[in-house]
Length: 214
Image (cartoon, rainbow, N blue to C red; front, side):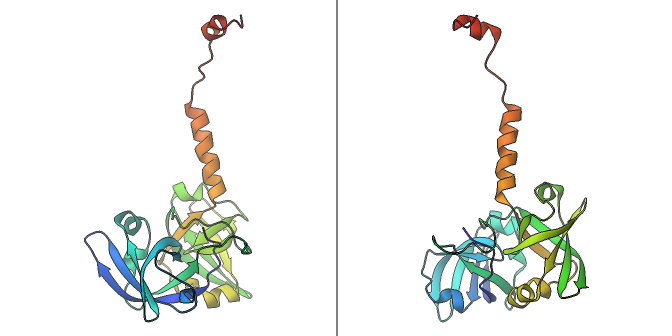
């Protein structure tokens, strides 16, 4: 579990590609201070497991389903990534609850300066947009952000200077792909409602009669 508050940006040191998977070596600093093999690290919003640590870098395995659902397959040596260690019990929750399980990707369609902030418009599929609400939370490449505006095929977020300086978001260009994770509460609600709609009642007049209610 994560908060969406990026601790540092790391650099892809190497990519060992399989037919559908990959092993990433990521150069980092702060997050390695107390890291150990088996720890979870949010990498551009994707929960990955550290498999080795050496000389200021760590490696992670990326399985096929993750490669197909995120932007990790587009990373190459020199790419910058947002990094966050897993939340510890007792930590302050300054962002929002982020699982590191990506719902899909979006594409940057507009970038506009807005006084001291930068507004970014992201186009996304309806399967993602149904969970996006105005002033709600969304994780973009692992960064906890507030939805500033919402349209039929897009939503906007506003990047303050601190976020711009400490994440990779303002390094993106129009057409760039970002990982998206919607607020998990909305997904749970939809799942519960879908079960309610699909279930048919087992109570009938015959059932009531057989059990002494009529």
